[in-house]
Length: 177
Image 1 (cartoon, rainbow, N blue to C red):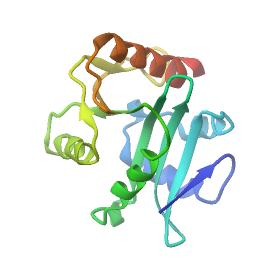
Image 2: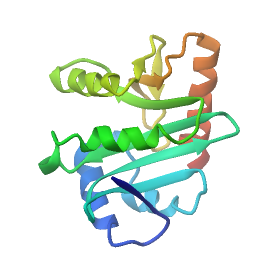
Image 3: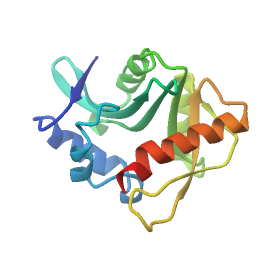
């Protein structure tokens, strides 16, 4: 699998947009046009996941070497291609990028789908952190969304967890509004 970084207008953006908008409710994502405006930022990586020359999904992540953190913001595989271990392959590539911590947000385990999603990440080595977390809103004035932070490795110290949450809030959310 190849991760093709998108830095501006690109033919894959149409497919990525359809997966992005289908996989994430509006309160858990930016307007796609605003995401495209962020592509020049060096710490944002929007990557098409390409297998056999064809896009099969996408991943967006923020890489902050100064903090030793790689934060996965959004990740989706083409629904027609799920179950073929493409997600595992993509995550394996991302967690091979040097970082002390790999972080991602996921909804709380309240139904079968959310529990399956968490189990998928756990099979890839991520662990649920037991501290409270609420995803900051993508739009000013909207409410925060209670979620879970999964990490590789697990974060045992609440102060470290809160430091990472502050980093995410500042560099992913508040920085852009």
